[in-house]
Amino acid sequence: MEALRRVKRITGQRKKVGHAGTMDPLASGVLPICFGQATRLMEQVVSGRKQYRMTVRLGESSTTYDAEGVITQVADPAGLSHQVIHQALQSFIGLIPQIPPMFSALKVDGQRLYDLARAGKEITRRPRTIEIFSITIDSLNLPDLDLTIDCGPGTYMRSVAHDLGQMLGCGGYVTALTRSSCGGFDATDSVTLEQLEDLSPASEWQNLLHPLDWPVRALSTLTVSETEAAGVRNGQPVPTLDNPPEPFGPDDQRRVYDPNGLFLALARFDAEHGRWQPTRVFDSREPSPFAGNAG
Image (cartoon, rainbow, N blue to C red; front, side):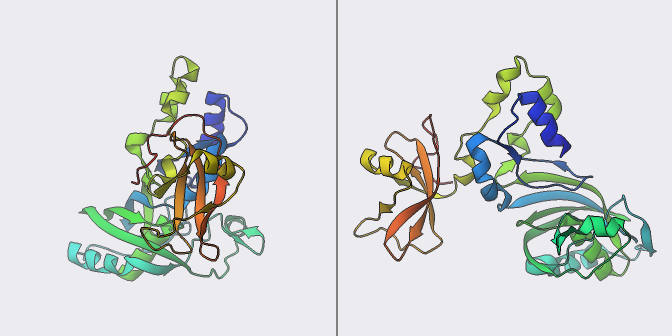
């Protein structure tokens, strides 16, 4: 990815640098970059909620579901009203099956779908369950429709545009797409690549970094004693209280801190043994502002 290559060049960091959340080639917007130990938290960022703003061109369909493809269908959308479109969009809310576009990085039998598509092949894709929390019509100026969409991971905006066009009977594809938030990061937390390049001195980029536990700050916390902290650093479990204040489920996770506020680990509740088992251990050097706080 070009953006990641530029970040590595600007920061001089070559190892343990990753991005959270692949974007379409025509898309712009928020792309979280993780350095060092933070790369081990990319899964938490990628699996978080996302928000997109996109423009859909109604009345035409595209082979790629965006403006880069060949137009395959043309129909007049002039009869569509705000009410009709709003009603159609309601069927996209919630947990729904979505068929990914052929032009996507998903693999089928070891082959990228976009490689098959570029070779002129189209195969049957299995629908995947995705979740859309809300869709707002920002403006309607036919043939263009501007939407804001809050969704879970794995949601293809191009498929939303295409499927909406098919539902309306006129076709549709994406002409503009911006990711305005990703896994708790939004535009107010972000800088442009140009702003990074203009920093002086060059090391100033380090002042833009968020605390290591930023991506998981919504999780509840568990503060352990100095003795327990030494064990956690070695991956040893932490016993729960004899009378825990709340019931714990098998998927419950906690952020673990020592008495000084150092972020030690992520831990998952082990119901069989009644204890918290570290799943990822970190070597934090500075107290976190999120120690003892959730959200």
